[in-house]
Image (cartoon, rainbow, N blue to C red; front, side):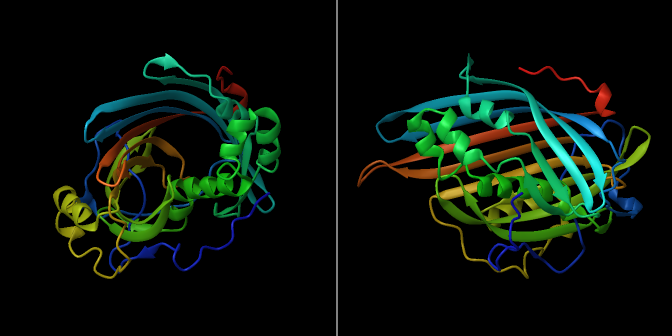
Length: 333
């Protein structure tokens, strides 16, 4: 099992002084109770032993490239996947096994048979946490480099050798875990609270930029007879644009939110912005539904005089089917 070392000073999330907030947002099933209630919640990762669920994900990514003297080129990727999760308590915390059981992909409407997806599907991951649900490591990716070399065409495996490694897969898993669970563990919030943070992020293509984020807890929403908390996260690499968005969405609570956060400016010719919508049961940290949206723009040099612009619009929608593991069904494709 690979364990990720503690983040360096440049990687740590920096929190602004002020009301404490947290991650996420989600679409409500019933009528919400608004921020005026002032109710408080403490988030705890405490799912019942043996909890099982199928995570269904629908994603769409549209890439457009526009350059001088070039017609705009568009490429649309769409996918649907199902992943089975099982959660077991252990003497040291929790083990959470994630096994992808089906995936369907298309490119501009045509089916895609992706050998990398098949390889990773054959390598179920097991997350390991401490008793509070904080990330410790992942098992399952130990021989990914050997399998790349032996199971994929030589040209493809050589291109992926430096990016699809045990360390990169573990770090990606850690970021996903913390974004959904770990960053909330033990936090007490009041409905209406907002949290500011910033961290340096490595984006695809070798770009490193500071990503600013504001997390807002706007309301309580009933879900299956329980009180769930709606969490909204707004993020971006351009601080002024993010602050303008927050003023529109949140209003006064977002004023001067980033005054105590100082980071180097992001590189020119690159920008990323988006939001997350998550509905969470605070007593277990189990997510009921989640929507993500992100837009990335990047300038691409074409020659000494010309610059092209690559724009990527991506959306993801997650739904969750909870049941005892023996009752969960998802066809393997």
